[in-house]
Image (cartoon, rainbow, N blue to C red; front, side, top):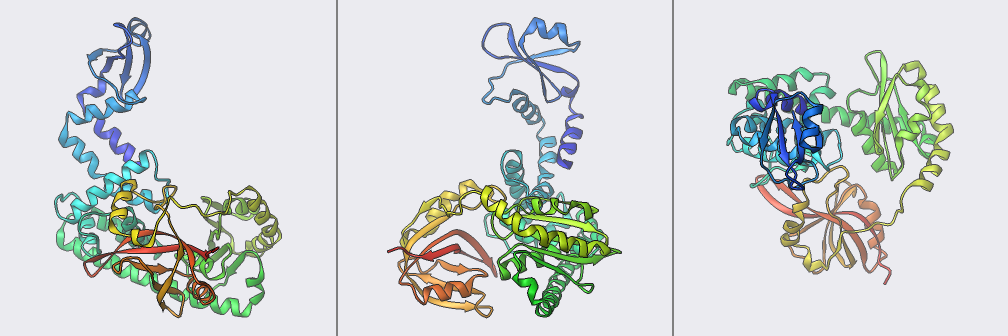
Length: 447
């Protein structure tokens, strides 16, 4: 929305802003489009248009290539003023970070915003543009591939770093950094934000430790279909992150709630394809506010309403899950393409990268490898994650399982081969970029 305000502000500075434009549609000498301030006012006969609208009309010749002449012409008017167009495009950096961080669907305008925003951020990273000194200094603290910034960098790097200020109740740190123009002050501000992000990680660890103790005391909670967690000493600001970790651990939907400035705030995360907002709606009477999307939601309520919320969730959880299973799409995992192990290589990665930017509702392409022979398994983090190799795949390709390492190791101990579904992703560490096959799903091969 902010980007649209900027767009409107810049457009209002053009001389074209105060005049209407008539462009023939090629169907006859007198038919065409009347466009004014980026809107299609009329399509049809010129004389009828002039009788309906008291505007000074300027004639132009142009052959439209899309079904949206007003949008196309709006862009063509901007192209006449390269400096203003560049000023507009520079704002795509923050717009792209916000679009990805808020998990907006990456299609239509959102897709264009993120694609162009990644280009601007890469230019800023390389100092090819200098319009936002604070963001430039923040980019210098992060690692990117040599030739681009991707939507994954926004969703897993820049976005969480900037959001950490809000999570730690220090939004002023992020705001001041993004507004800062002095290089030295921007550099120190970026380091302060980096420090806040580390503190956010430590707060997350403390909450994980506390919730583990909570669930040991209340083991019955882990036996319900939805995990509900609240304790007065849980720390605020990271409830969504903690809920996601608990989903990975307990393999069910999770509500995680903390006290926050006299009220309580919480997050809910889905485990499968269930719509968590439908569960929150069953308890909306106790919320001060709630919202989100299918996979994740947030809410606030009075602390004394938490027992009532717990009862509503427990009373409705089983029926809700049954309803969601009936209405959800098939659980069958489908891949974009099935590959042989030797075809897992940089060439296929480059060919399918044309579909970027990836994100919400435009996921990374999923590959399948059938009858994969697994070897050289290396458990990490007490077996939570596993690094391994696939027989026949290039040695340069690292294969990884996140969060389901124990299930994976148990399955391969009694299986000759596995069917794998996953995605190829780039990973940059210490300025070295490598290709990884991240396995999302696996099962024993049928033959």
